[in-house]
Image: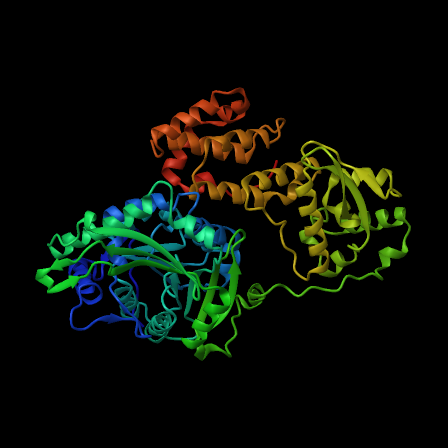
Length: 614
């Protein structure tokens, strides 16, 4: 068994020094072919600009800006997946494993998983692989990996093939986890995608302990897809055209002139796929390559396939891979999937076997309408639940109740709760009475004094109708499901803040940590509009001395302005809003040492642990 010698934040050249010749060979094979056309396995002839050429140093700077666009949902969706599922994902990774991140890009989204492994004291070696040396350097600069004592880090500069070959020569028989984030593997025409997965299985996965973690984008909403690639700032146009400009440098030949080409966007179905197309306005002669590209001929580039989970399952099966578990993003159709080789079908994963439930909707029990509590008087029901809460360790949080105990709360037994809709009209919400009694201290106080009530009024301006409906649906779910799940957080920022505010008014602050966590972690993956400052100021409680959301937003915006990480126009918008009286609490929350901490520690400074309400 060979040993891996690690030096923190070291970058090894495993083939990156040959990138110029590598890209030149790809251009000659895929774009400037003459007698031997480049075809997909299905026989479709294409001229293609290789993706590796798009991600040159200038392209990477543009790509970084794209990932922060509000319209570009993919990076944000991946980040949310890691935030939501870091603990469960971590259980699939064994001590001493080697994590090989193929095409690492911005590794900040991976930090929740690495931090979870560090918290669990699982020593692992993490190898970010990328074609760009600068990309790996930036990844190290943007994160505080050295603070994770259980994680050893070495960058690998080279291609995916170089990365897998290096792992085979250096990692011995240690468990290896290949990370394919950003929809890398599986992002191709079906037969070609299967062939690439087969290559990874046959060359990279050596034993039943080896796995692949893939991120997939299964979005089918055509408008959402178009909007994500047709940004108002024109960054994708800049990215694609810069890639073609870079090809001139690689070939040492000015074959590409912008005025000769139209850049088109095309979205097709079956499979759902978006691609950019460079279309010749007239015949283009490239004498040194003995190639003529005729007017109207197209060059494909930056293809984005949107395979759903079932379509990807067909790819995995055809490639000889077995899907072990799947997690879906909280706000969109981004999915994580863990894969093992077909040879390990009968193996047992001792650390993560219970996680296979994440693949499907958890089995739901039939509500128990004959529960003992139904036979009691209203006062008897209240007393029984109070006794159960007192006898349970942490009984005021439904997470600590077993499935059978939650079922005894008889979700079919409801009470009408009157709230106001957005127009000020009174609306009744049917709320599971006893589950709400456990969850809400405000309702518990009322029902203890009035156990016979069948109707209660909560016409508070901070308790929205949507929030109450979300709470009612969640309570019914956790009283009938085998597995406890946290209250679902809306993807819309305003609705999530309203839900948290309602929970605070109802005395349910113990259930809001996911809302706080989701909001704060999302800050670094989306642009912050000036009006969001007003929204947060309005939808956070005035009497709270220190609010983690106010604190994070205020200091993050101050950090963006101090280091000029947003345009001057955006800075001016922030200052104009903050000058108004509505945002005084945000100004009060700004602290110089917190701004410096964000600059030095990034993710950890913005998203401290634990995230809890006071």
